[in-house]
Amino acid sequence: MQILHAAAPDFEVRWKRLCSRGSDQDEAGVRAAATAIVEDVRSRGDEALLEYTRRFDGWDPARAADLVAGPEEMEAAWRSLPPAGRRALRTAAARIASFHRRETDSVVPTYRDRLGARLGQVSRPLGRVGLYVPGGTARYPSSVLMTAIPARVAGVGEVVVVSPADRRTGDVDAWTLAACHVSGASRLFRVGGAQAVAALAHGTATVPAVDKICGPGNAFVAAAKRLVFGTVDIDMIAGPSEVLVLADGSARPAEAAADLLAQAEHDPRAVAVLVATSEVMARATQAEVMRQLAGLPREEIARRSIVERGAIVLARGLSQAVKLADQFAPEHLVLLVKDAARLVPRLSRAGAVFVGSRTPEAIGDYVAGPSHVLPTAGTARFASPLSVATFRRRMSVVEMSERSLAALAPVVEALAAAEGLEAHARAVRIRLPEPRTRRRARRG
Image (cartoon, rainbow, N blue to C red; front, side, top):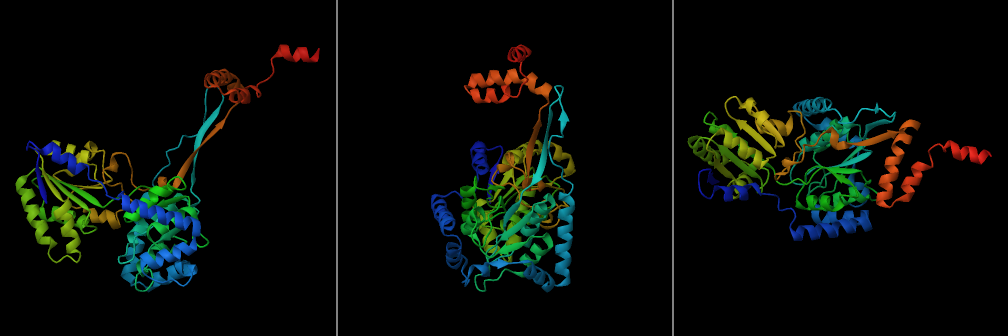
C-alpha cells in the first residue's frame, strides 16, 4: 500500500490523484464493444441474445425459453436450501424491507394558494424494472435482496432479474433463485453482460422491456447502462467497490485491516484506503493486512487490490482526517475512532457510514437494512444509495380556478410575447371570460 504523509510537500498532488480514482469502465474498447452488442440485440432480439450467451456466458441454450427461470423454479431452489440458509435469507429480507418501508416520498402535499389554484405532487411506482445481478462463476444473492426488496416496497408492478448462468451447466445457483423467491421477483433471465442490459432496455420476444435498470455489473454492463440511458432510466454507473477506514490511535489494527480486505477481495480494481491519525496504528494495520491476506480464498484478487490501488494516508489530526474523508467521498466509510457517532454530523459525502468498532462494513453488505447498492468513484458527492425513491417517480398536479387563471393570464401573456410564442398566450386567453363591452356589442 502506498503511504501518503499529510505533512509532505507533495501530499496535495498525490492526494488529488488518489481522489480522482474512478472506474476505468469507460475505456474506448469496452465502449465500442458494448455499443455493437446493444445495437445487435436491439435489432435482432432473441437471436442475438442466444448468440452472445453462447459466446460470452459460455453455455449453450437450445432456445430462448431456456433463458427463463420462473416462480416455480425459484421456489424449488428456496426449498432446496438448508434450514440455516432459508433463515439467513428470511432475516436479511425482513430487515431490508423494515428499513425501506420507513422511507417517505419527498413530494409537495397538495395545497391551495392565495389565488385559489390547487398545486401539488404525487408519487407513483414504476411499472416494470430490471435488476442486474452478477453471476457466472460467483453468486450474489445479497444483490437480489438489496435491489428487489426496495423495488417491491416501492410498489413496482413487476420486478425481473437478469444474471449470467454457470458456464458449465447453464444453471443459476440455488441461492440466487431462492433470493428471487424471497424478494418477490417474477422472473429471472439467464443472461448477462451488455446483451442483458440491451434486452432489458429494448425488449425481445422473451425478455420484456423495462422502465429502469438497476444493479452493479462489470465494465461491459456499466458501458451498456450508459448507452441505454434515455431509452430507460438507470440507477447509477457502479465502479469497483471501495472503502475508506478513518481511524485514530484507539482503533484495533486487526479490525481496520479486516475492513480493508473485505472490499479488496471483491475485485483487483477495488479501492481500500486507511486515513489514520496515528502512524503507529497505521503501520500496525499495514502489517496486519499482509498477515490476514495469507490464506484468503481470494488472496490473489485482494493482494492486487491492496498493492496496486490501496493507500494509507497519515493525517495531522482528526479534523484533517474528517476533511479528507469527505473530500474522498467513499462508497463505504468506516469510523474506527473514539466516540465515533460524534463525527457523523460533520460528514456529508459518503454512500454509507459504519459507526464504531462494532459496525463492520460487511454487516451493511448483507443484513443491516439499507441497500448496499451505493455510489462509487467519488460520486457520493452528488449521488445517493439505491432506495425506494429509486423506483418511484413524482408527477406534478396543477388545477387553476377561474380567479387564479384570470390573475395569472397577464403574466403568461407577457412571458409568451417575450419568447415569441403566441399560441401559448392564446391558449390562456381563450379560456378567459369575454369583457362585458364585447358581450354587449355582440348582443346589440
